[in-house]
Amino acid sequence: MASESSMDIVSKMDMQELKNAIDQAEREITSRFDFKGTKTNFDLQKDSLVIVSDDEYKLGAVIDILQSKMIKRGVPFKNLEFGKIESASLNTVRQSLGLKSGIESDSSKKINTLIRDSKLKVKSQIQGDQIRVTSKSRDDLQAVMKLLREADLPIELQFTNFK
Image (tube, rainbow, N blue to C red):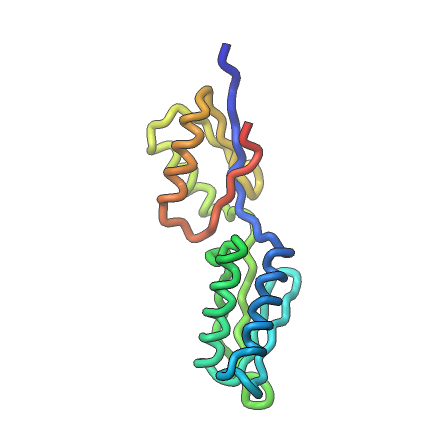
């Protein structure tokens, strides 16, 4: 007798890995010649990251460095929400990056529709900021994983509690 298999689709930011990526980016910035004497720093808060640098060009370079460190550590870069660049004190610029965690209702509905339209024999239901997918076949659950990885979604997804 085949039992039901299930998995949860979530979107979360591993804060410890994000801190590690920021530390690595800070170390690279302090050792790089083109950043000598700049006023570049990161300020990580509960749900945002504020980056300060000398000008927009340097700010872009800092974000590129941070992106490469985040990708190496497996931290989803898609889950950053870029605010506008503002002028700050001492002739610097600052940009606030929001940290998205959880699947918003619009994205949940879009994911549910994608799963339903795939004609796979699975059931999906929204549970708060995550989605539970159940099926009699583990292969169908893996097909859903593949489908969602290939879909162009505004957030990075993780698949947990695969039973």
